Image 1 (cartoon, rainbow, N blue to C red):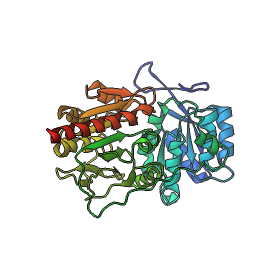
Image 2: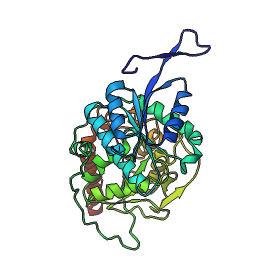
Image 3: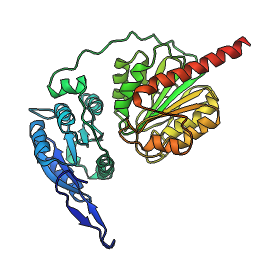
Image 4: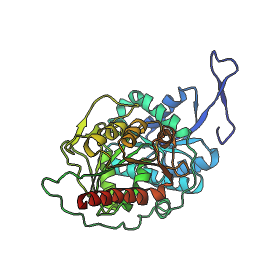
Length: 384
C-alpha cells in the first residue's frame, strides 16, 4: 500500500476487485525523459505519478513532502546527482529507488555504485534519448512492479554517509593480484553463486571476504543486461583479494579467479573445465540464467561443487541447485532476514536443495569452509 492517501483502480470485469495504485516520483534532469517515463507508468492501471523533479535537490525535497511508494532516479543531474540524492533518501526516508542509467563509460560504474548504495534495480536509458522509452516500456513496468513489492530499511553505512554528504568515499584497499598464466589449469572444485535483485550489493559484501588462496574456481551469475557486468566485475576486483573479471568464451575455470557471466549471455562449464558462453533463449525470462550454470557443474566437477543462491526475484537456480545436491554437492542460501527479495533463495529452500540458510554476513565464511572441506577430503583420498 502507498505511504500516503492511496487511490484505487476498479478493474474492469472483476466485480468489486480493486487495485491500490503505486505512487511514483520521477526524478530526471531531462524534460523529455520525465515526460516519457511518466507517460509509460501513468498508462498502467497500477501506477500513478505523484510528482516530477529536475534534479536531486528537488527530488529529495519531494520525497520528504509527497512520501511516494517508489522513485525513479536519473544518475547524472546538475546541482545534486542521483547518487547523492539516493544516499540521502536511503539514510533519512528509505523508499525503493530504481535508477535510470546511461550505458556509457561513466554511466555503468555509477549504476553499480548506486546498487551498492541501496537502489533496488535500474533501467538502462535508451540511446539516443530521442528514440524514447516506448521500446523499453515492458521492461520498465516489470522492474517497477518488482521494486514496488520491496520494503527497504534505512542505511547508515560509511559509504552511504559519504555519498549523502557529497564527498568521496574512503579509500578502498588495493590488492596485489596473482599474475595469471597463459593457460591456467582447471580447478578440481568450484564455488558457484547466483543472484538477481539486490545482487550487486550482496556480492560487494560477500566476494571481498573470500580468501585469496581459496582452492576453487568461483563462477557468478548475476541477472543483468549487457554492458553492466564488466563494470560490476571491475568493481569487485578492486574490492577483493581474488582476481575478478567478466567471463569470456574459452576462459578456464581456474582456482583463485572469479568469473562473472556477461550480461545477455548464458555461462556454462564444459567437462574439461572450460567456460562456454551462448545466446540460447532466456530461462525464467533472464539471460544469463543461474540454472544454466548450475546444470553444467556436476558434469565437470561431480560432487565437488559448492553453490550459494543469494537475493533475487523469481525461482531461477532452484532446478540447478537440486541437480547439484543430487550429485553430492553442497548448497546454501541467503536467509530472508537480509535479502532484498527472498524469491530465489526461497525457491531453492522449498524444493529441498538448501542445506543451510544464512544471513548474508555469514555466507562467505560458510562457503569457504565447505570448499576447504572438499579440499581436505581430496587430500585424504590421495593419502589413502
